[in-house]
Structures are given as structure tokens and as C-alpha cells.
Image (cartoon, rainbow, N blue to C red):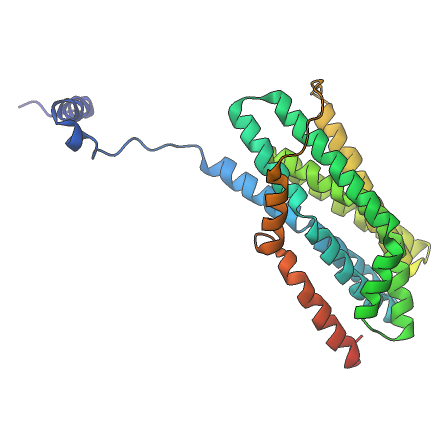
Length: 289
């Protein structure tokens, strides 16, 4: 008797599926789709890396200032970082909205819209970043009025704030840049940019704090300059092998407002930021800062 081979089983399965009624043949499971796990994990890792870049910058500053003889620099940076986390997480909708819109345009095969979304959102983020930089004095006054501390800690916090606020335009534009790359499934480029940004922040922190002795101002300035390095590197990555399609700017749609509401209402971490104020206030009232 002949032993059945795998080809015989395949022909038998095909004949059964074709002879069965449609309602029964629909129960036969489709073949498994392979190869999606690795791209999915790569994008998830890139998305996580882009999310932790802002708080990680404050952590790097804290690590360097913690080795100084005076603890007021460390406490001042921790105090001012709360304000920056609130500001930048509040604008996280730039990255979320850019990622979703870009991915939809890619799915439709409309390359012109892909570039239009990038340019339009970049201009919006640049305008918002410049506005934050212009309004730095009222933002600083309001933030430090809520976060009370000793005079020495307050002075160090204001100094750090003045150094880091210079990078506000770059931070908001980078949100759009990273979101645009994620929408194009360029997860590897996002990870590389995150490594470059944090590495440059470490080098600049060492130079400004350890070598020049600029203290908390050096930490803030190093973080701001690392954001501009990230922006310049990202633009080089984007334009190195691509040409922007000439297309007139269109008006904003209502989806941008919807994304802003979603970002503020629960799909980002901005709703947790006010808690930092309360924790910081109680911390310094109890003499821990």
C-alpha cells in the first residue's frame, strides 16, 4: 500500500473546501500571515522611545547635577522639570495627530498629502514653540508661584528654566518630526534620533556642568541644544533621499481640534501633569527640596 504524502493531504483539503457549501467552507481558517511581528515591535519600540525623550532629558540633567556639592541645583532642576513636563506633554497632540494623519495618507497612496501634513504641522508647532518662548516670563512666574521652594532652590530652578526654555521651538517641532516618521513606519530612524539626542545631551551636560561649572543653567542649556541637534539631524535624515513635492498649504481641518481634545482628556499623559504640581508643593513645604 502506498504511503500518503503531504501533497496528497493538500489536494484532499483543497477538494473538501471547494466541494463544501460556502457557509461551511467559510469556517476553514485562512493561512497565517507571517512577517508582521517584527515591524510591529520595531514601531512600538520607536513610539516608546519618542515618548520618554522629554522626561529622560530631565533625568540626565538630574544625574549630572546630583554629583555637585550643593544640593540646591538638583532640587531646582527637579522643580523646573515639572513645569516643562506640563508644557510639553500638553502639546503631545502634535505627535499623535501627525502620526495618524500621515499613516492615513500613506494608506491612500497620496504622497503629496504626506508632505503637506508634515509642513503644515511643522509650521503650527514652530508657532506654538515661539509663543512659549515669548511667554516664558509669565509661564515662569505662574509655575514657580504654584511650586514654592526655598530661595536657593528657587534661584537654581529659575536659572535652569531660563536655559532650557530656549529649546521650546525645537521640542515642539521635534514632536511633529517624530510623529511624521512614525506615520511613515520609519521606526529605526526614530530610535537613532532618540539615541543621538540623549547622547548629545550627556556630552553637553558634562561640558557645561563639569568643565565650565555653569550649574543648573548649563543643564538647561545642554538639554535645549540637544533638541536642536535632534531637529537638525532629523531634517538631514528626511531630506537626504527625498524631495518635497510642491503643494500649496491647505486650511486646517476639524480633526486637529479633535486630536487636541483627545490628547488632553485621556489618551496622553498630560492629565497626570497637574499631580506633579501637588507632589512638588507638598515636597518643598515639608522641607524635602
